[in-house]
Length: 443
Image (cartoon, rainbow, N blue to C red; front, side, top):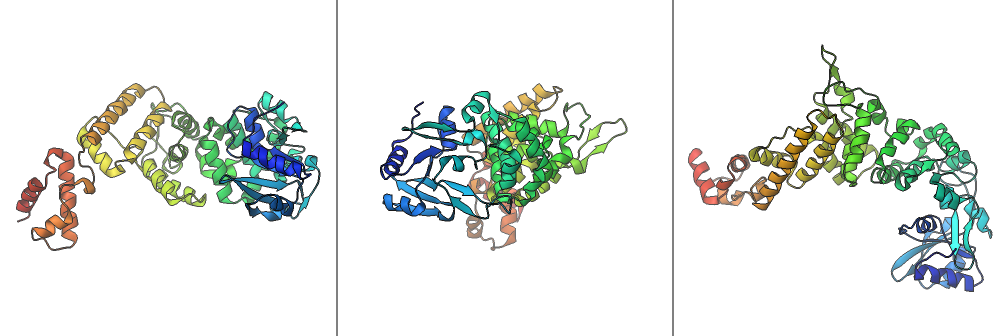
């Protein structure tokens, strides 16, 4: 079978072959091409040693020389070229104690994680598939190369990668691979938070974020996100809900756009319910204050997982306000925009909509109609340029100083009073009107 590969990749392979070496495109790029997907990058494996690779190409970078990887630069694009290798004993659930180069492609392929990632290709040889990777692609199966326990001992992150690939591709995890992953989930404690974060995000923004349920069932969230386990079985016996907190969360993940911040918000938005749970005399569940508690908890979790400050800030803000009581009133909408942030308000409406879709049918349509009308009001407020933030106010600090106010705390207080006034009376956002009205009040 002949598959299409980029001209630059073909050129690298040809250069290596003409010098007497074996060379193949390998791994995910072969998998994705067979699936009709566009590969994110193209990796090449070769019998040539790193120094031999560097002698053949004009521009190279030593990106992983100890592990046999040289990046070859062609037309300003980098392609990783790695020597066939055998990994020695793994001591830290990630790094081999030693790497031994080998002239055999078969030895290199059998150290890889899953059969669908252990295929190689060049035009001369065709597809090299020693572990039935193409068969597993056709069946839609994630299966380890060789012994699953050994593969997971080599790198514990592969436990999460199995679920992540199943989410991205819509594949099932083969029974033996699943059993080994579940049995060894505790090994994820030895994996860095940065690597766990990367896999979690890829799963969340995939076509099947509901595979979070698999992470729970396999005991993986017990290690990487125990706060999720705490709510997975938490009942919500009230008219608004028909699922446990955890199942509601999973349904919400399926209802919200595949944006990183929105999906993270959906995953974490109700974790505060575990500490806010009360039951009234009639046996109904309540979770007063869960949004604020959830925002605090989300910040702690995201810091632990080494997320960047902007993601933490945006997620915490959305969770804190996801239960905000909005009504079909432009003043209330402007107040909410001021409180949440003009740009963030659109995201908040998406969160509220997905949250509603993941609840019971009770008042669902009424709530969705509220959100539809409020979104229209929000768009009108933006289109009309109505003031909802200090930067939109017609009066600034220098204007107050020019009319005789002393610099200091009082200026900030007065500007905030003006802002609250024009949020209620948007037509009054005029410098002359505001100065006359407020300076007379403060005489």
